[in-house]
Amino acid sequence: MSKIVRFGIIGCGVISRWHADAIESIPNAELIGATDLNKDALKAFTDDYGIKPFYTLEDMLSSGEIDAVSICTPSGLHASQAVQAANAGVHVIVEKPMAITSEQVDAVLEACETNHVKLAVISQLRFSESIKKVKAAIAEDKLGKIVLGDLYMKYHRSPEYYARGGWRGTWEMDGGGALMNQGIHGVDLLQYIMGPVKSVFGQVRTLSRDIEVEDTACAILEFENGALGIIEGTTSVYPGYARRIEIHGDKGSIKLEEDSIVGWDMADEDDGAHTVSDKAEFSSSSDPTAISKQGHIDQIADFVDAIIDDGKPVVDQYEGVKPVEIILAIYESSRTNKKIILN
Ligand SMILES: NC(=O)c1ccc[n+]([C@@H]2O[C@H](COP(=O)([O-])OP(=O)(O)OC[C@H]3O[C@@H](n4cnc5c(N)ncnc54)[C@H](O)[C@@H]3O)[C@@H](O)[C@H]2O)c1
Image 1 (cartoon, protein in one colour):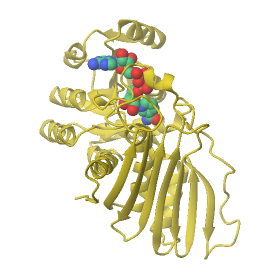
Image 2 (cartoon, helix red, strand yellow; image 1 turned 90 degrees about the horizontal axis):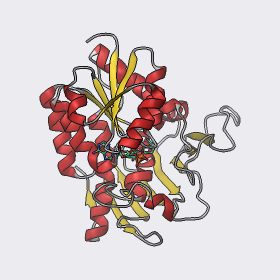
Image 3 (cartoon, protein in one colour; image 1 turned 180 degrees about the vertical axis):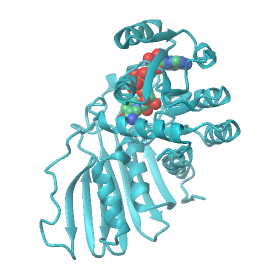
């Protein structure tokens, strides 16, 4: 593998600009071109970045000009486009969620194995310094026996938000609502911090928005480490609040707002041993575009290194699938009114 990874972007909508800016800021990455079914969106994007328009994905993948693709299309297309790229021998970084059904997950895993390509799933908050500190505190046993891990995501997305693009809020293209779209970031962080989820009992509802999927969800979780937890996720409350994750042990507790640490109380540390923020720096609680650029830069740089060094991206396909499995289990639990055990 050469020392420069050449990228093509699939889908030139809102999030594609985070990818393009990140790729352009990484020394051993180069942004070559993009493709989009919408010719106006493709022209505006490729003109802005001075890159090549590819009129079909097939053209991009067979051009020999691209080593990796960033998939930034509606969620229901992620798996099939990842499989298509893998089958063409092209590495893949895909926006969350990696896939929206178990069948799609299996197809992606198989295509990556068969074709020996690298795949990374965007979960940019895992790269934040706060999350690294929380992981380290738990690894050092600062919290003692962990008893609770909770996620509260009370966001606001307007009816106009759901109407934009024609895919949001549909089972086929969004794959779910408050959990599968917005909530997946928090679900991934919760399981990343707490470890594997053993079972879920969930209830999901469409209470306030005119959409097919849930706008409100609650679940009780059991973790493999014995702790319990709660997920509350909604996109229907006014005005929308920063996402909170709370981890409690018998020797300490940590509270996060978005990815900022706002509470750090340890029995074995003096008060003030750790500085906490008053509030989150970035929160997409009511603005879907209030997203830091740094997370995408760090994650795409990690993906580029994995390709060049033949290593493993931090959030590879086996990591990317974990929050999807938890969310699908919550949906199944709500449908069947039963507790679902995860394998
Ligand atoms: N990581 C994050 O924080 C974050 C934030 C926002 C969105 N996302 C994810 O990014 C994805 C895209 O979201 P968005 O808000 O940018 O959506 P968007 O609707 O703004 O953009 C999607 C683009 O894909 C194009 N497209 C549709 N079908 C296509 C096809 N078959 N081939 C090529 N292009 C096609 C559309 O024309 C559109 O330009 C979603 O999966 C979403 O979950 C992630």
